[in-house]
View (cartoon, rainbow, N blue to C red):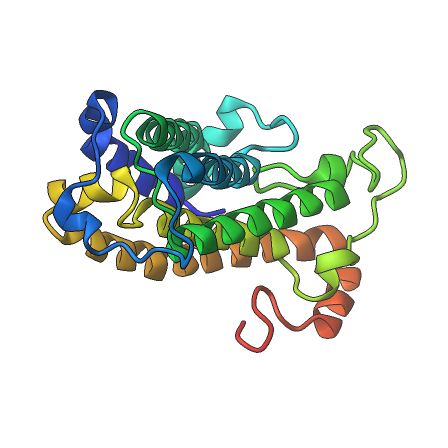
Length: 268
């Protein structure tokens, strides 16, 4: 999870909120850029599958940005954290509101404006978001009560999610953690990329709003988010690894010697 997601969605919400509330259809000029799937039935036949795709994207987003466990960090302690951490945790609720608002607007376009176009971009974005949500949820289950969005150790939680166990919980190295050290961050990053694919799709009313209101700068915004997101993610991974070294010591050192890659095998 990175700060880029909530910050970017906050800026985009301010930009497009009036048009989302009023409703809009995809402009004819922008519609000409749409690349359809080979199957081109009537709008009525397209409505149900597009609804399923949009709801799948919303589910992936919701799972990825919703903490699986309540935060145990007080406001006083959180105020001492870095600006990046405060922005991340403070703007996550706004990100969820934006995602729900965008989904509701797309569904309105499907059933009111008959904007039922299904493109390869939408399908690929759906697959990426759902896969990211599933990976993220699996990581939640593996870490149990120890998985929170606060960057802190949880020595009081056992590996099966129970609290108050005297024994120190083991380092989780199973499942996706046997391939890379931080699979949940991969899910957070790829979910955001999939979300961009879906909502900057020419068939999307949100993509049409951004294209007209930002006068072509929406592509620059897309590139900026895709480039900056990994850099912000790397910074948080490094901070988390320093925390894990302190918590697990030699056990973490052995794990890093065995699992060399933090995020993407062969890259980093």
